[in-house]
Image 1: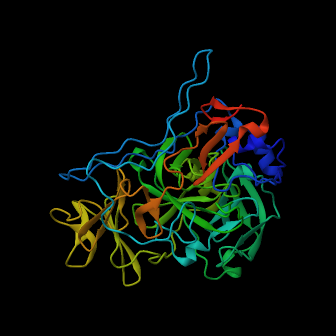
Image 2: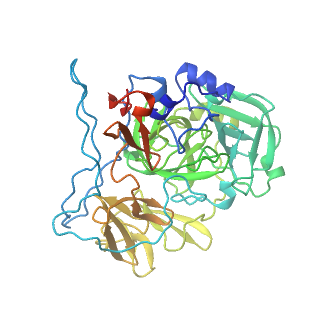
Image 3: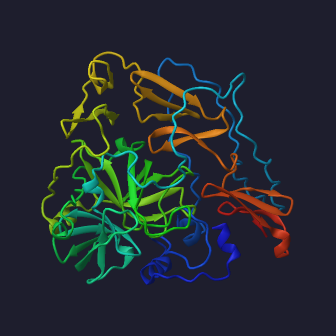
Length: 471
């Protein structure tokens, strides 16, 4: 990472993570020095030949039969190619406020939510119950998930051993229900099972394990939203608080599934081994992966070791997967449309109806259900979606939208759903630009600068991983 060039030495506080750094995989340990906050990916540090992810998520198609406003040009400078044996390319133009299309004004429907750039204290997408949230715990330097009353799923690169404690609890920053580990078993990939010395329910009676996904991930999962959690570093530099982030699945490769924080949120130091959770075909929340490694910006592409690749190995120790009663979590009677199914709460139980036709707004139930005919919101539910800078969501059968670009904002996910969020960097990305002898770039949702003259150097293009910086 660019900021690391300012530090001649960084002490590593986790021996297990140190080994992982040497092998070129896994998350960076929590640093002892002053580092940028947020959530981070190793290819920038471990393998200089690995291209840096752009953070662009999959494009959302426009709604059927609805004209789209003129799409504005991107304000973020692209990475210029290295000139063959010559001078570095000229710096791109300074970023400006995101332009709107001809004749467009900042108008539309507002969704009032807190500004969110990184993790939230509660799940934003999946219907996790308070009892299931208790299953997300920490080993101190790594995170993990209780998948049965006596087994925890985490990452092999955490280097855990028998006797280490797995801590859970209702307070996000005070996981005080700690259980010693009896043994640890590593898979062939970056995944570990930890057997606890006692049934977690004896110490934490309300805890409900989150079962593993028992079906296979395939290309149909690309673009679907997953929810991640862990006790890693947050954007304010804090550490050891359980947080959540919802991101789209962008890639399946070998035993790895990848999600993209799209420059706004992600996982970071200390989140290693934490769960990636999805909604299974039966409507229940399942764990689909354990965090292996991630982007150096903490808001880019993060990679999880797939549960379906090791399902037989897992069940060889835990036994057949049993799904305990999950309740409705954060899903209410209005419900949602997810992956072609209507998900809603009915008398305290989570219902999941696979739709032969369309899932959409049903006026007769005042909720999202399987319906005949056209959906008045064109397939958009209450959580909403981002379409070319527009924040769209369905409110009681009426499609609401706001042009975030025309308002000088970006479209993203807030705790209540999709909305317009402030862009503190004005469209500038991590590659940045040079303002004279000063390098300027966006990192973890904040504008960063470095006066290169103070270092006895000038500002210029370094490489595709670093962008513009002192050289």
